[in-house]
Length: 336
Ligand code: ADP
Image (tube, rainbow, N blue to C red):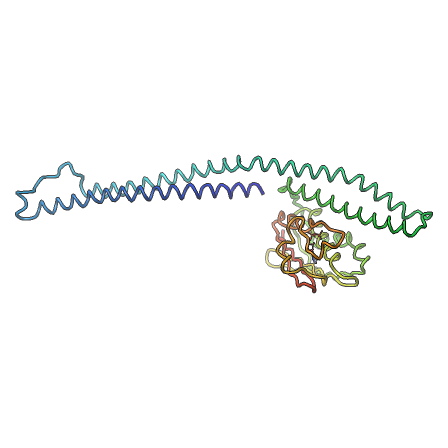
């Protein structure tokens, strides 16, 4: 992220410096050539007068000290070449200086972002243990036969749901923070797309079963390169959303097809869809569509993490959706 920003900033610095330098050079070249042209005109005029009959006696003054026409033309060419060389040197020097200065400008911001990410990742780590304990205790209480009061059981159930949501938030925060700090570190294993999808599908099977949602899988296998854990996580996020935003008893279709050097994986649901107003923003961090805000689970982090994972694998993620009818998330990944 910062390397791209550094190059962009360098390009801006360079653009400004080169505009100033070129404008200055053009003005300088213009005034110097006008001066040279004036001298050329005068020399030509003197030469014409020298050869004009009758005028010779009166005006003939041999202009020995005046430069010849060829010399003046050469001077014009030389000043043009000189300006090109000077601008070339400025371009190289300003490029190097701009790159250095851009690095210096971005350094404190980068340090701040790193500190923030470390803080978030530490905080999420610290929250994991108490949440796991709380979850175990609540689950234990629900298993307790002596706890017969239905109201108490309901309360524990709802607390357990909140704990699930908080656990998913801390996991996602941890992933988001780590992807900021370790953005370039992607494992390079040879992976099977079918294995990734199957393992992701297994992880969400309980959620799907709870809503009686079925999967229709029609996958053409493909070998891709990257991190199995990260890519599985990206598919889990997409499947989890498809389940979350689909009605009970519906079906989710998972398909893939090979297209020259890439494979396209599509996850299609017949859920509530996304409104055109929300569509451009759903991959932003913490963005949740209005309709989703009323729902408990989810904090608007999933898709931003999925996008980051896919892009770190040189892939792309896109969505088409019709509000009220369903959505198709399409992931494109390069083949090994
Ligand atoms: P969340 O945790 O809120 O689901 P995400 O980043 O995963 O966060 O998704 C962002 C928003 O995109 C969601 O709040 C929801 O409005 C919308 N969205 C994502 N996937 C779907 C889907 N399959 N169907 C409808 N809306 C979706």
